[in-house]
Image 1 (cartoon, rainbow, N blue to C red):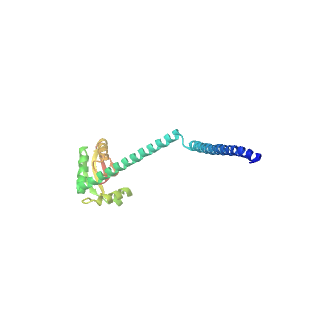
Image 2 (cartoon, rainbow, N blue to C red):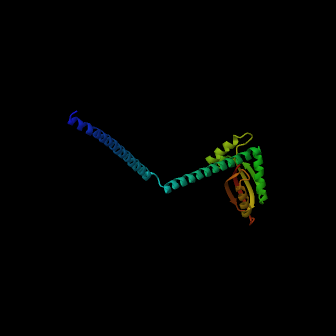
Image 3 (cartoon, rainbow, N blue to C red):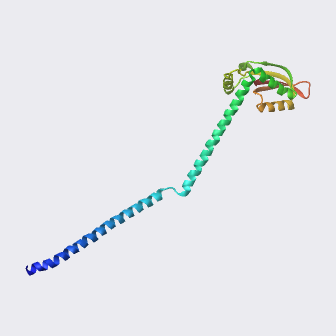
Length: 204
């Protein structure tokens, strides 16, 4: 073995060892830097998402609006249920009476309680003596569709009463205990200083 060979034999293992350490440390450096870069990118994405996300105040406002809207929906549903019950009450009253005469008797009894003295009463042609609205006409049709129910029509009632008695009678009538809707009222003076002659048109 020459001197050159002996020198190479001594240096070559050291070179290989140095190369191995270099590769190991360089790989660790690059791989570590790559992970660091990924972490920075992920943190930036998280920061952007947090910046774009609604604040706690905004979320609280949205929740409050949703709660208010839910309350309004419930209120509307309760109102609809109340209207359905009112409608049933009106139509069931008509059906429970079975005959229109029962409603007329109830109206007459109401007016007598308030001191009304009847002169005459009779049904009239709604087209000539007392026009009714489209709404009332539609309601009459709905009521008449019920089994055992009669279609309401216009009735003219002439009577004597004082202002005060008539006012009380009309107020009680407005409470809905009798299915009768006033359409018109006229007055005629009498020799009596207190009482007047009245003509009342009612839809009954």
